[in-house]
Length: 190
Image (tube, rainbow, N blue to C red):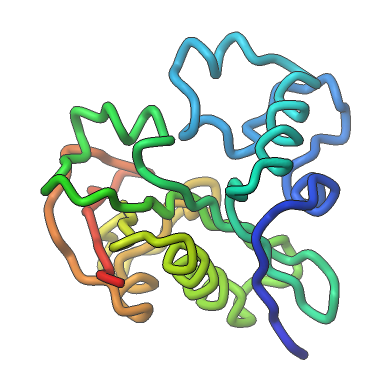
């Protein structure tokens, strides 16, 4: 079984990861960390899907998708931090320097495919994509949970261990918390 990670230019494949059963539902579509609070609140129902369709059609993909034997099995949101309003303007997650870093903010693996190496492939594929687009470094803001289990609803931010295994190092503490755990700023230079 081969895992391949590609830029997310196929809206249909992204929809495999995020589309709700009822199209008019206002689900995340991984837009919450891309838009300002006001934009995120104002974008409702099918307009959220259309925003993602627009992002998929750009030259710069909104993230990467993992495929196993041709089937979509995972997603990682990655983009320049400057494009991600909540991170670009965060008071809780510091900017440690002026480097135009990229941020890997969301990792999602479909049920039935977890614990099969897809998370590692997504992190590496996202870093490779950022590198191919000229990123000098990639940051992520995972939880520092030690040996404690992270609730599945909050696991999208990742864990310190995942990123350490992918060659990231802790660069700073943050004032952010997810699922009851502190988030840290981790970085991998490219």
